[in-house]
Length: 343
Image (cartoon, rainbow, N blue to C red; front, side, top):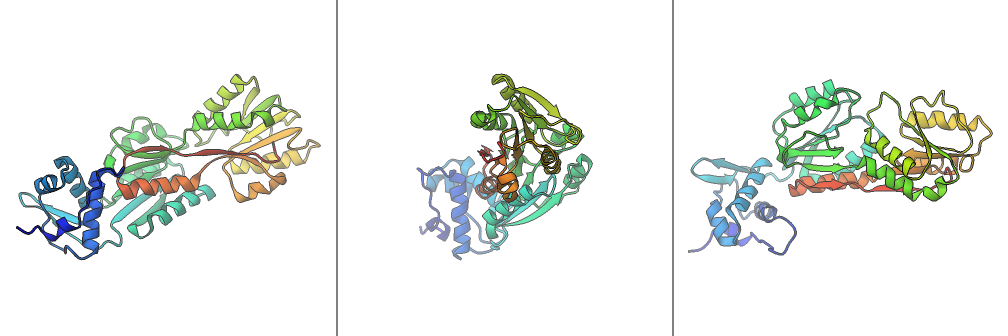
């Protein structure tokens, strides 16, 4: 008996690192794209796929469920799966929920959109670090999104964020930048390891830091930055015998020779530079400056600011990779030290 046309365009590479369910799903997508199967065509049963391609029933079912989730397949109880749509232009629909707008968030957004290309429609929402707005946006969301990408940073109230996030089906969830304790199940994440990142970045700058006796970190009290940054900072200072101090208000902090400053907020960076310029202290010898998050201007300011920064471009690319491949991996984002004259 001649097999249905779909069997001719399904290919499983048993040596590939791509999950077999995704290879099967992509084969069916290509079959639709090539016009070998059409809208309302009935697809082979899960048992048929399992038998013909020597894959488990779970693998075949997972592929069908993935294609159903992105809107290409439908199913009828007792009859199986059929082609619901042949529109491949926007087979994915992504809900992006960012804590704020910034230069770095724009890099992430642009990277995600560019990497997804025409494979997805992307809706961006901003909650301005406000937990109440975060909760409202997720509770009022439509249910037709295939993925939810969430950056969870809050000024207050964030201790209950996991309860809201846990209402999202885990196969649709990608936590970005930070993993929230209490989020259960198998979900995807592209995250920063805040404690280890700052510790190892400062280790790489140890030779330059050795000219200073004190390292201060400017960390406003009302901040969404995670406390893990402070843990890594304190661990480094204690390990290498530096005096340390958390500065909550740089406007009133006394600046003295032999001190290096780690700055997180862009507004605080302006204040810090203005105050240093108003003294006779020389940046890079008398006073050191390290700024969080690379920007083009930091290559120029004070003949170059030393930065410690995540790779935001890579963060977006890896997020898109998880979306396109239906993966639930946890991927740590690269973190870099860029040494310049300010240290």
